[in-house]
Image (cartoon, rainbow over all chains, first blue to last red):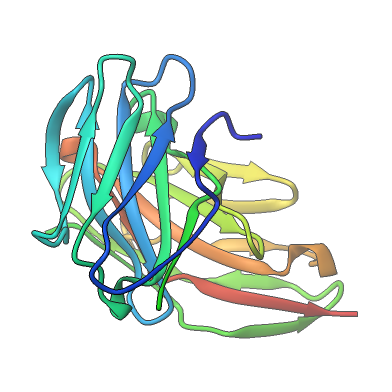
Length: 112
Length: 111
């Protein structure tokens, strides 16, 4: 157990639907990062939150949004889902740049 | 901008063979460098890291040395095992606390 908890582990949904992925960071970590991993795109950085504030955005679609709550857990909202959104979505937390990331085990999203 | 380039796979080795996975980076200044490993069906796990030039990171028999002169951080292991079969990612972190990952190198070790 890495200390980063992601739920659900698997999600199957239809095109056009909306889903919410949840992440609880490791205790004490203020930073949360979201990544998308697909076979053809590799690991794509989506967004970074630090202590509730958005710090950086990567290749995140406008249909996707995220937030970090006062208890530091984060949610990634994916809407108007398309088949191409099928991927593994990872959350990671960090105590600082020299410590690296701690990754959760991911949520596998399948859009049918 | 910052980026990481690592050798493409897949790599297939026999057990006890020597492993090298090349990684080079582009960044201004002095980034911290990392290797992550992803076993099938799991998330990425930190394997080793180096935070300044000439540092050597090591863990579980794997080693990598931060070479600023060649902007490289190659991963090596002297004798691989079947259990080392996984995907390996080189990464750097610099300003802004954002990680830049390489595309990953798949390693399969056969008995």
